[in-house]
Image (cartoon, rainbow, N blue to C red; front, side, top):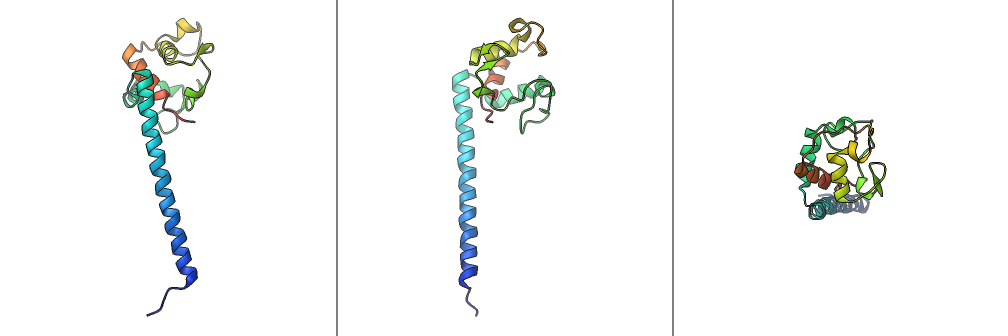
Length: 138
């Protein structure tokens, strides 16, 4: 029986270390994502998972791009990944959960003539969409 060379052993060891590191990174990423959803839900009082469904249902992705969201490839409005980190929303509102909800529910009242249409989004749906948007990392 032939023994394994030291180069082959080091190659296998490096591969295993890489694999363990990759699994660790994936675990940390998923943990951070779950934590971000929990914080957004607590801060806003909405459900980010339901908010993603409402974002799709209202057709927000026809104007806005959001990575990894089905149908969210729009080029009319700004991309919404990282929106939670922005200082201003809707042209002049400070970026707070209540202002985000206000903007989603009645954009024409906030900024008359804006390209964002009034989609008659209800209060609960706006809260959930806001929670979802606040989970979007850049």
